[in-house]
Length: 576
Image 1 (spheres, rainbow, N blue to C red):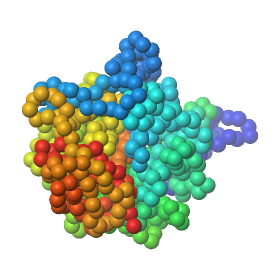
Image 2: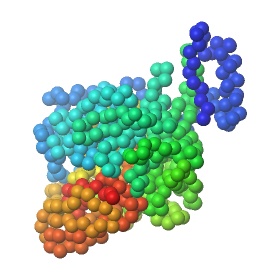
Image 3: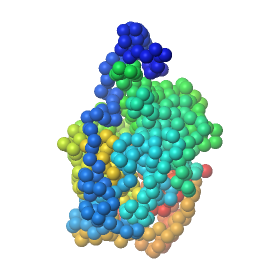
Image 4: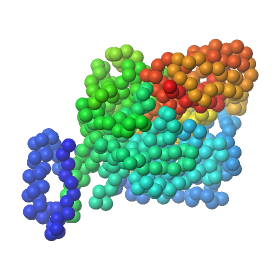
């Protein structure tokens, strides 16, 4: 993998001095001959928003009460910021709350939550910016406890002492321990950001500590995706290594290079490199394939990726790895568009121009079909699978990372009808570096955006979906079924006892994997309806038979009544 490394000669000469310029010209010609391209000009198709940082300047900070209003003061505080220590409750909504849902008031967050991971204890790990709202996660990360509420006392702002800038790292909740594995992130070269590091860090919920591991990855990675395998191993794919830099009076240019070879992390044996699975098309340098690759563990026992060009690839992580291109093509997409696995092996992929495609991975030959289009081209928006299996899309902008075409309304897709329904309108724009993540109470945490962007959104909103409201048009919260008991751990193919608080009829039991969200993608979320029988308060629930459909890890178990109202989830760890 060729790259130009900054040099510091004993006798200082600027890089464009005639002697050095001649040498660099020879090197550049060699690179062009060997790779079919070079660093002579920036490749817009390979750039991300951070590479264009100069366009934005100093964006105003919004702590929830509006851009420029300070956090923590009495004036301008939203009602949500004023809430004392209590759990988030479903608010009364308008008459159409049972159709559109409701957004709660925005509340302050100590950083921009551009990365979020749902922890096994129901709290949320977030990181990505400084407390000033600027890019960088070398010094801080944060933990939110929803059981305390939405006030400042519900947040912990913690010191990152690892020396790793985890901005734009890869992340996953480890299936056996509930710790968070974070790989790669940002690196500064000659004062310039957006190069990669190869560091490996682990967040431990028990003590809220972030610890750097002794063994690093073989490749530096910025924007990598992590996928959990049935074995409990984690496949790491994609990411950029070096960025394009045109050079200046002191330092030579650098070229875009990519981590096109996957790696696998085993909690017991450490790291191994899939040396025979290198691919520019699946997760490398070809048209943003490296950029948080849209990837899932498939029912066929492989990691399947969907790229910007609409191509699909399957990665076998056994041995030294093998990757093959799959038949079928989707319409062209973009790196800033979301996708979600809404049923086992079935993916809703948002494509460019507001189009959407359905991909079925339940056979050796995938099938691709058109889905109903969204209301617009939600660039940098999110797609979240809800407790009933519908998919909620929010945020984004038709004009990119700006407010001109920002979407404040949200929309809900039904797999049963194949149609989109317009849902509630948010108070805040959610653009680049925004997140949306399902919570165990059936709500959706949506927040962040910025670094860079037109607003540094150091705030979040909670979306209360339509299923949380009475169907009579009163706007009142629905009476929810309650799960009294359920096992904390189980294994595949097992029938587990679940006890309800009363004999209320249950119509559906769903299992949804915990989210880990960043950059318009929740790489682990997946949904499955579970077969069950009910006798009075007692349910007998059949867990998934195959780890290919439900890889080991932490899941939310919801019980829904005849009106489609979900319980608060019980947390279950699925594993051997």
